[in-house]
Image 1 (cartoon, rainbow, N blue to C red):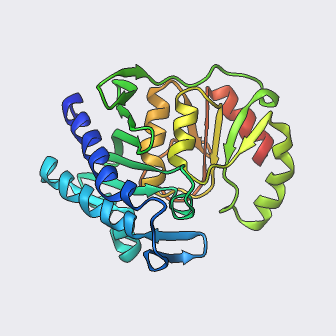
Image 2 (spheres, rainbow, N blue to C red):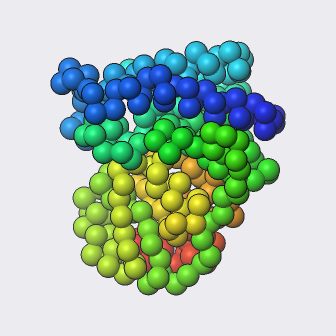
Image 3 (cartoon, rainbow, N blue to C red):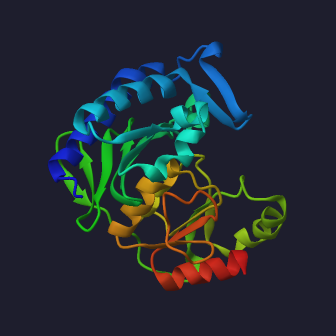
Length: 274
């Protein structure tokens, strides 16, 4: 199955419309009752997440009437939806507000993510920046690009390979098991610089547009990673799970490393996990 460039732009417009209607009007205007916890104190949901997910789901059903639409908040309410996604021929996963903790705290680092998964393979991806008002888009085998509000396009390209000591990376260690966390944290000094935006949308954006070199995540939920990994591949990067297997949106454990090339991936893995 192929999603056309025209359909990809329609999805980007849908994410933009949801951000303008449901997310931005609530930014820095949430009441105390508009923010709730889900699985723990670091896992939040707001009225903006839920309203945006409803908006996006309705639009995707119009565009792709035969697809299964899986939003993060729907999956949180019914975890069987995540386990059943492998049965769908076409599934579109949606993260209506990635970086909810930032959004709830009034920090302007959050995004809207979506990915189309056909028979277990990601075929299209979108990462929308509501404040910057542009969208990273990728179609499998057709490249990745940033599209602005006025239709201006420029290609996504990962940065050139560099040795580990010169790498800038976003390394998310918060969800690592305690023993792995204890082993990884002292090794972060081996990189030139390490950051954590608390927002995969902006971390993938940074790496996929050449602003950093490496990403490391331990927790793998498809709405957090399916879009970013496809854009990374189409932008020329190399990624694999911690065990070296290719990333699959149907596999939700095992961690992932994204680097400019395979040699860089191997260097990062050996340093952090070897």
